[in-house]
Length: 313
Ligand code: PBG
Image (cartoon, rainbow, N blue to C red; front, top):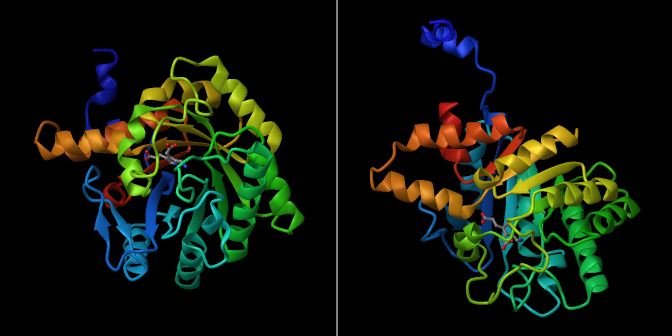
């Protein structure tokens, strides 16, 4: 009965909790689609929709009402081309969304995913010329900054992307904008539903194994994180989350940077599917899942469950 003494009542168990899950830990992803008249649910992600400009602010309001402090924005443009030119159009889909959201919800922290894959006609995260890719990422980040973004999140796993973006931001005076780098992103099978969400289902054929990490690698994750720290990343991210908690702990032990995890589309879909069939009890399963990320050492969790779970925390 030595350790069970510590579990004798709910109040006592709560007082002794080592790890907590709080609403300020959560970041809610938001998809904004330039071509929609009304929101469209993503078939493999029940409860998550691409927003239209007519539904965007209502969605943001319902997110902010739960106490969530940050969103991460993904844009789906009408036009894609070989240069990803819509991504740095000052009136592009993300630029407009940032401006609209900031005008009504100035306190809400807007993180913008910064990548080419939603904007290229082949769905790739990079152009064929690496130098041009970095220059393009820099242009995108600067144009998001002009629209009022708070944090830039480069997600392409390309060497040099963080320093290119940092230089671009600094040279335009945007010193206060942070970079949240997808520093350790694995070539995962769990991004499937995101392809539909990001509108690259038809354009993207192939895989991203040339730049995303091999799931077999552990020590290499530390090298990736080191590189991004050296390039000026303010916040590190590990992605996916639940399958890579060992990596989260490795990074937590080695770096003092704030650490984020991305609970990705396939991880969401798995839990939703089991819950919809009544095979697991949804709310406790979500809480336990997200808590495991905090316990592994994450500060922040990007999760499609954010809006659903926030009122219960
Ligand atoms: C790429 C990007 C991806 C995700 C976020 N940013 C897809 C990819 O790398 O193939 C996946 C997120 C998810 O699955 O929820 N810019």
